[in-house]
Structures are given as C-alpha cells and as structure tokens.
Length: 527
Image 1 (cartoon, helix red, strand yellow):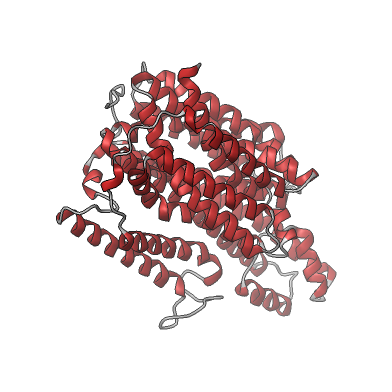
Image 2: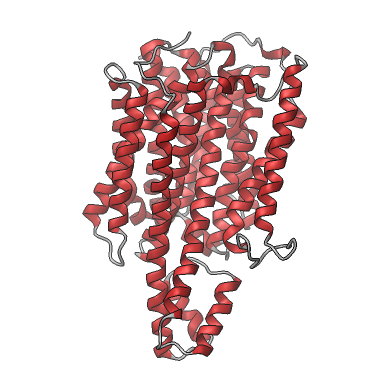
C-alpha cells in the first residue's frame, strides 16, 4: 500500500480540480437566482475558469521546472485553496468570478502540470499505466460525482459549502505532501517567458471570448455587439485578433528557441506524431464532455424541472461506468493498443450520443436516459485510461513538465471551448427554431410576431417556460397567442438541445482523424 500512497495524494488533487466544475454545472439555476443574473452570465464564469487554466497551464508547467514539481504542486494547491475560500464567501457575481474563475484557475494551472509529471516520476512501466488510468478515472468521477454531491448540498444546504469543503481538503493534501517523493530540484536554470505568457493567454482568451459571445453578439450580423466593423458583428474580429496573437506567440517562441533561450513552448515537441495525436484527442474529449455536461444539466433542470440533487442523481451512471472503464482500460493495455482502445471508446461515445438524442423529449424516460449516460461514461473512461499515458510516454523525463503543461492546456482549452461553443450553438439553435415556429403559425398575429421578433433579436435566453409565460403576461400578449408562443418556445428548446448534442456527435466523429498516430502497439513507457 505504501507504494501507492503518492497516487492517493495526487488522485485526491485531481478529483478536487474537476469537482467544482461539475458542481457549477449542476447549480446553474440556483446561481442564477442567488446572483440575480442570467444563464449566459454563469456560462461565462464557467468558461472563464477553464480558459484561465488553459491560458496559464504552460506557464504553470515552467514554474514547476523552475521551483521543482512538488513545490509547485504545493504552491498551486495553496492558491487554489485561497480561491475556494473567496468563492465560498462571494457576495456578488464578480467576486465569484474572481475567486473561482481566476484565483482557483491560476492555482490549478500550477497544480495540474506538476501532477502529471509527478505521476510519471513516481511510477514506471505497468504501474505508470495503472496510475494514469486511476487519474483519468478520478477526473471522470469528479465531473460526474460533482453533480450528485453538489446537487445535494445546493438543494438542501448551499453550494457555498462545497467550496468551503474544498479548502479543508486542500489543507489535508498539503499535510500529506511528504508522501510524494520529489526528484532533486534541477529546474533553477529555467527562465520564465513573460512575453510568451501574455501573448498565449491573450490569444486564447480572445478566441474563446469570441466563440462564447457569438450567440449574443451575432456571428456576422450584429445583435448586442459591443462594436461593429463595416456593419459586421465583433465576433469574427475578436476571434481573428486572438488568432493573430497566437500567431505572434508561435513566432516569438520559435525565435527564442532558435537563439538557444528557454521558450515557453518548444514547438519541436509537437513534431512528435504521438504527442500531437494525444493532445488533439485530449482537446476533443474535453470539448465533448464539458459540452455535454453544460447542455444535459440545462435539459434536466430547465426543461424537466429537476432540482440540483435530482439532476446529480441522473448523471451518476456516468461516474460509475467512467471509473470502471478507466481502470479496465489500463488492464486492457496488455492485449490491445492505445489506438484501438481510443477508437473503441469513440464508437461507444457515438452510440451514447445517438441514444441521448433519441431521449430528448418533453417528458424524460429515466431508464433509457440512465443507460445512455452509462454508455457515455464507458466511452469516456476508455479514452481517459489511455491519453495521459500516451502523452507522457511520448517524451523523456526532462520534458515531462512541459508535456504536462501541453496536456492540461489541451484539456482545459477543450473544456472552455466545449462550454462556450456548445452553449453558443444551443442558444443560436433555440433562437432559430423559435423564429421558425412562430413564423409559420397563423394563430399568432403580425403585431405579436413582430414584438417577439424584436425581443429575440435582442437576445434569447434558455429559461423555464414559466418564466417565458410571466414575461408574456407582462407584455400583455393575448392568452391564446401566449399559449401558442409557449408551445413554440418549448419545441424550440428541444430542437436547440438536439442540435447542440448532435454537434458533440460531429466532434466525436472528427476525433477519429486524430487517432492515426496513436501507438498501434501495446505501449512501452519511456523512462
């Protein structure tokens, strides 16, 4: 047992890093009420958390090289704990965003690259594959148990207790840091690249911001756009500005590498086909998982009317099957290659997504939904059991912190894009389907249709039909026409949800293209 105690500490930290994202997802309705805001505002806070991690993950890996991985792990946990305390006591939305999205995000950006490298440094060969399977499984458990735990606490107590509890767990982990054997701190020679950090963070932030706001700003035609260029929405220009900054970041890093200086990212690593495939699959997996875990709780809470705890119960099958598949996937490496296991996982995920699509109805059928979520967990678990080990095994010992930074950057960028992209598609599809429903309805007068059209153009929200009904009553819409609009909105909600879930299916299909360079033989771990 002593051999695995380091994994117990690292696994607890991994579970903690993903737990509160799941808590936030299942507590969306309560957060909207507590902070007197809208779903899109909470979506922005959730996206910002993943974005801060993605933007600073590579820098966090470099800090681990400079200070030593265990020390960076401990400092990052301390920052994370401070953020948890701020989040638990947040009186207004901007303090919630500061404590959770920014401070916790920065702490996680130090913890996760160090964690990935410490797992690789603590275990070798077969044990390493098992360790990464456990870490991957715990990530899935955190994402799926979070709704159950957070749902119960949110429904019967308050969501703030989850973050207060996280601070306590951080203290316990810090007291057990000595269980992790740290290699000698040889990273003092590493110099941090401040310019690269700013360029990468700003570039990623602008790209994700543009995707996130596309539903409210408008993709091309402006709606609530903060500015316009030649009559076009700000969305594409914000995304383009981010792409330009990322291009400058790439040029800057290549220049530093050519001069023999320490770059933030050595792009030479990305010439490794296995590493590229592993990173692409991590990004794909996170985009799908966090996209679904934003959309599905909305369906359960807004359409079905479940509270946070009831929502968490219906997401529990993902937790169980993902842990089983992650651990079982590690054992399967004895008889199957990572490429084959990842491809099987993608097929299983496709089956689950099709099953979910068939189950999106006004009245949920619990058993088919539970089975679909269980199948989704199996597919995700197979991917989780392989990808961390693939990435770390594609590089040598001296490159593991850097690979860990790239690994977690891919995961968190996928998480932020999953929430932003799938959320934006959901809102856009909702607006389009609603407009289509009312345009062809002869029972709605032209005056009411015009009034509703102006409201939709200003920005539609994914809200319970009861809230729509209240708004229609305040607008003095005749009762018979109000009922028609309610029916149209309910149907549009389901259409929007189906299109959003269908998009995750398309991303899953696209994922097969990235499996080409995954190891086709049973993995031999580098030491």
